[in-house]
Length: 322
Image 1 (cartoon, rainbow, N blue to C red):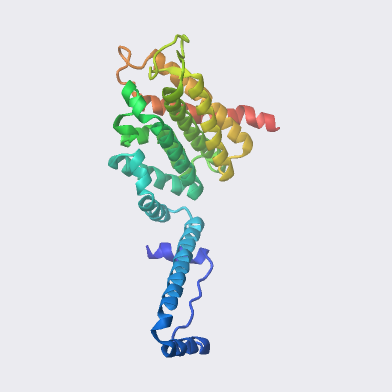
Image 2 (cartoon, rainbow, N blue to C red):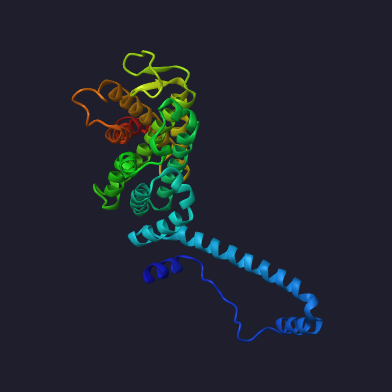
């Protein structure tokens, strides 16, 4: 940890502390005046001390944020920063994750920070907040209909891994520079697209369950009850599209992808989600496909989102730019 501190301090502006061993004439006069004026001045002095303490605390927090922002993405800084943020954000985390789910999320976000720094971490955090918020919408009504997520939407490690497997693969490939710099941005694009795909899937499903008036089966367009595997609604599809657009915009704002690549992520997410709905309607819960549960379908879904985005970038976007 000493190496972390030294590295961070070298990257940040030096801190200058006043010399308290020899008080200034002004400070000496202030103390002399306080002794002469007696206790009547003490409340004012206490209020001043409180203001100074608050200012000092604000300075410490600001300096800590600067250190986080300037920290190089090493394994040590990734673990240290994640530990700090997870402790501060624990009240929010427990609303969307079980204890084991938080542990799995910690490993995921440590890997993300190591690969893509604080920008990658913030992208995943935005996905988590948006997905959790959508899951909580009309939770009591969805529970009454039997279509709500189990444990009031608090997801466990299998769900975390199923939702992030493709992103983790892209992060590992980026960390170890597989394919060199030529593939670096492709892996970053696949990473962002995987989470755009998953947030679109989560939001479209949860908003469709809450507000969808008519739900259609993806393969036959037959009207089916809410919560049916492979079912889609207009309300849910539009909400998922907006969620994907929002997260792609966040990735663009954070410098992870370019505006054309953001458009690719949105389009790839919708193609992947349509494919996931077709798979769910055709095979999930069918004889011989009992192994095809939600977690496996999630892995297929986000993998499709990553692969489609990379292929679009290589065979469509590059030619369009040329």
